[in-house]
Amino acid sequence: MTRIRAGVVDVYVIRPVSRSWRVLALRRARGTRSTGSWETVHGRIERDEKPPAAAVRELREETGLSAERLYSITVNPFYLNASDSVQLAVVFAAFVDVAAVRLGDEHDAFEWLTVARAASRFTWPREGEALAHIRKLLSRGNAGVVEDVLRVQ
Image 1 (cartoon, rainbow, N blue to C red):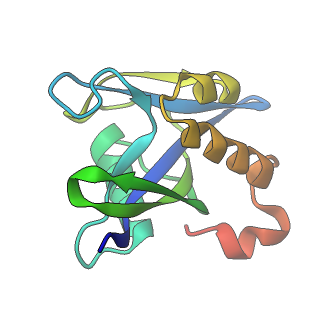
Image 2: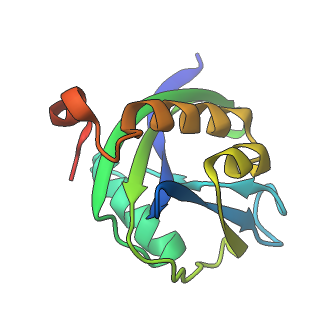
Image 3: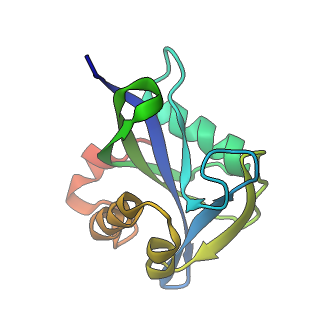
């Protein structure tokens, strides 16, 4: 029977610039899955690790950045044929205050893009959809009346 598992995190890295945002897009390196595709920070939740901790760890490993603020946004399901499982990607928005990125081995390029450009650059349609959720929920720079529910750190 196909398993359902919350096994991965997606972390959308946002850097406020003046009155707008820049979103980090990462390009997958040669020799990795989906070589050349553009995506957000994405990674596995380790055994005995909670999704927020995985988001913080993956952000650090893939970009060298730390979140000033971290928000839980939504969950995106997808089927992973290799393990015959439906994975639930727990989606986070991480606000950072620096632009200096230190890429891990999985990526060979990055760009800071506007929300619209990031949504169109990302390979997976669900990434553009998650950005729409983030924009709606956090448009004022915080979650407003649902800050107590969505803010993780």
